[in-house]
Length: 133
Image 1 (cartoon, one colour):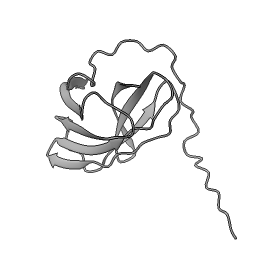
Image 2: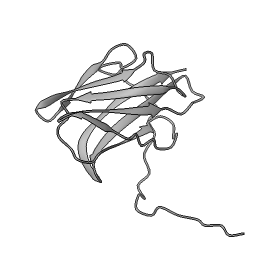
Image 3: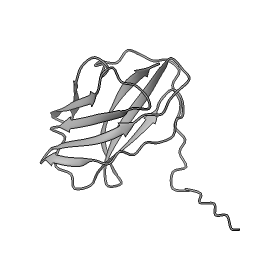
Image 4: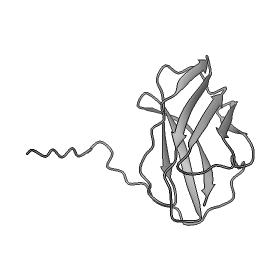
C-alpha cells in the first residue's frame, strides 16, 4: 500500500480571519447587486434567495468583461471553510454563470468572499456575501 502527500507550496500566505462583520453595501440574500469594477458596474445575482449552505446556488455575472479563462475562489472570511472553485460557462461576451454549493457552518452568520481571476492573474474584483443559519 502506498500513500502520497502533495503539499501545495505555491500558496504560503494564510488568510486573516475577520471577527467584526460590518454591514454589506448590498445583501445578495434579498436582492441582486451591482459592484464597481474599474469604470464598470458588474451585475451579480446569486439564487435562490435567501442563500443557504449545502444547496445548489446559481451565480450569474453580467458586464464583467471578456475573459477566456475566468476563474473564481469562494472562501470564508470569518471562518476557514476551504476553497470552492466554481466552473464558469460564458453566456455572452461579458456574462457568465456557475453553480456553487457552500459549506455548512456552525456559526450564525458566515461571510464569504468571491475573488476573480483570468487564469492565474487576479482581476482585482471581488464581492462579499453572508449566509445565515
